[in-house]
Amino acid sequence: MTDDTQPLLPPHEQSTLYKIGRLRRKRWMKPLAPVLFFLVTALFAHFAAFHNVIELGIWFTDWAPILISVALLGIFTLFFYSLTGRFRAACAMTFVLTVTVSLAHWMKLAVGRGPLYPWDLALVGETANVMDWSCLLGYWPNLLLMLLAVPALVITWLLLPRAGRADIPIRLGGLSLCIAFFVSLFFPQYSALRPFHDRILQRTFQQNQTYARAGVLLGFAAYVQYFNVQPPPDYSERTIDERDSRYAPTSMPAGSRPAAATAPANTPKPINLILVLSESFWDPTALAGVTFGDKDPIPTFRRLARDFGRVDMVCPVFGGGTCNSELEVLTGCNMAFFPPGSAPYKYYIRKPTPSLASILRDQGYNTIAVHAVEDSYFNDREVQPRLGFDTFLNATKWKHVEKVQYYITDASTSREVIRIADAAAKEDKPFFISVNSMEVHWPYPADRYYNRIDMANLQAPDLDPKLRETLETYIAGLRRADKALKMLVDHFSKSDEPTMIVFYGDHLPALGEDYILYRKTGIWNDDDSRLPLHTVPAVFWSNCGITLAPRDRRPISTCYLSPIILRTMSRPLPPFFRFLEACKKQYPIFSVSGCVDANGKEIPIDDVLQTDLANDYRLFQYDRVFGNQYFRKYTLRPAP
Image (cartoon, rainbow, N blue to C red):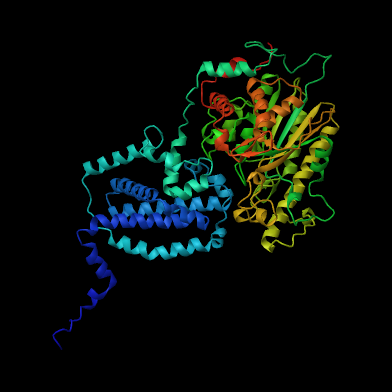
């Protein structure tokens, strides 16, 4: 053996684990190892959460979100360590929580529902309805990057120090600091993230890019502040009184009351109203390269649109979020003034809130909500009475319940509406029935309809077999929805009671991941306006000679539908609905999905929100939903 020959190390000292163990015992590694673990965890989470290469890269253009994300992971680890007293267990809990949130965010993006928000945690049931875990396989770049990050995760995990248990006073102190941090997130003026809010949320209505820039962890934490909705700076009884006075009917000064709906014998009878929200209803003939043979998939809808009137509406959601479309239709409220991505039915409708139902109820109508679900859906059991419905009937109280797989059929919904309407017609006052159907709800598996007669003669050569099957199932559902509409029209055509039906879709269906069907059929591409992805149809019908007038085919926002309905029925409008009519003249489309002015020019919503008109809208809405409801002095109530 020569002098420069190195002696061989014992076998156990040659192992990687031994070398990592020696490195872990270095004094400088003890504070560095947790930081490295948090950084790799944040990277792993970001690899799970991004939806395209651009979103992946945006995060790396600014060091601040990365460092804040690492700090957030440290705070969560401190929280778990304070609870358990075990540092490595706390790191593992932080990792599991982070990856779970990131994957949920990714899946929500995959079905076109936007980023994951804090309030989504209360919508687990609805979120599960739109999750398809098989689409993970379609995003192999994410899976590849996550797999590449696994070795780094293992190494940084092994480098973590084996810290002993801290004393109880220290753990209690750490727990108190974490709780104070978490509570501060709910109050923008005191939030520990306040210095970064403007930087994180500078593009309020482009939440995908907000999350891409901030990372899913920081974006999620920053949106917690919207649980606590702040009043507009100029909100007061005087400002609401000024605006209500401005839009109050000239023939009805404050304090006066209009006649009730039970009109004298020598005047026309008040019109019964049936408002049907048809789940995911849309006109599929807009799909380029898709034909249906010699059969129109929605012939009844087409006939009513021709003979009685159609209006296209821009709704606030895509692929789900029915309650937000229904909220805009019934109340005239605008999702632009709620926290981004929230579900007001879950959090904000906590007291009586004016709507089309309460307006008609106050004018003498019997108001009934009929929902084709067997359990509470978006908190509807509590919300519908607060909106002014005298009666709420979900499927547990129906006489006719039929299902196709997991959803109640539209045919049984129509039969139930007919039964309820016939019973209500025997009372000495008109009725308003608001219907929420469910049959055409996502997903659209090929085996949903075993009776293939319902399938359209669909020709779509550019679609792959799986996507074609999805579209076929959806079209079959539309045909059944159209037949259910015909059932209503046929029945009430024979009725002596003046009745009007308004039938509308709540949002477009999610057909394939990442809008794939809409991309392949020319509806939408990445650089296009998103309005086509949010434009749904509505039709009117009546048995008493009423048609929609004027028949303006320019799209409007869903928040304008109720004033149109009341005008068509010749019913008086409260000041807020008169304000909406004035707003529609300036911005026919005023929505989180996009804004269009009277000249047909699309305008960024952030610009519209700076206008005086938007400030008036914000004040009206805050007063109704969150505020002291100063508007009530102008409520249209029937004479005693």
